[in-house]
Length: 279
Image 1 (tube, rainbow, N blue to C red):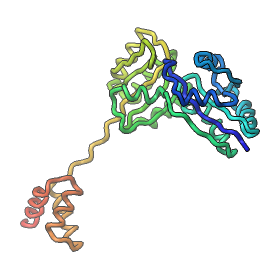
Image 2: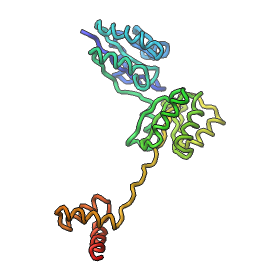
Image 3: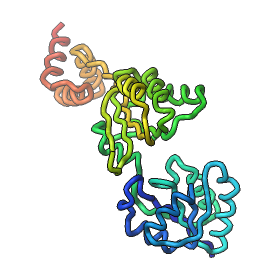
Image 4: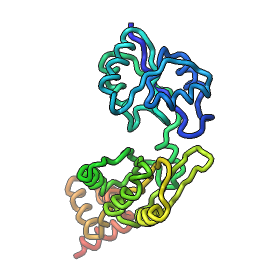
């Protein structure tokens, strides 16, 4: 009988954010697959946990993924962690989850810290609808195509970025979306020097050109403004009333339905219908 794969989120800055369930999952696992075993070892030492560690990151995931899977299929349980936050989100853990799922291995996740959601919640930008875009490609062509595909995106967008690429990314975002587009830049989340910088893309680029950025960033970018639908007028209202009455509706019901469809007051639709009929 195969073991299990459990995704365990780790603190994104403050070790006090480790949850009792996350700690229990790390304690009960037979071994831990970690993005950087040195980083995970510090966390385990903080928790007083001793476990077998295996490295699993972008450049060894093909080789180590199969090794991890075979151990799980042999009956061992594995806890998967990244250096910070939820594994498998913009992270090679995504491939291990897929590999295990395809092999019939039970996969579960402990909820917990996630930099993207933490930053979104304090961004002061709309949170009702958003899309996570992760890290932009280092290839200029791929970056351009990615951003062009988002030119008309109306949802709030979330990006991750490293400090040495931040200024170029801000210029790319500004060129695509316009320099006046609002952005919230979040760094050092949950740490002593947590910073949230709410500004525009152009101002952010200028700011960090003058003040070299430090630390990993979460960029929360406002979506494009939705295009306004053309407003219906009296002629549209009268024409729709004629269509509906021709279909068998009474004038009263036709006016009511036309008003609802066109977003106009019922008395305005009724008046328009009467004026057209009188001509």
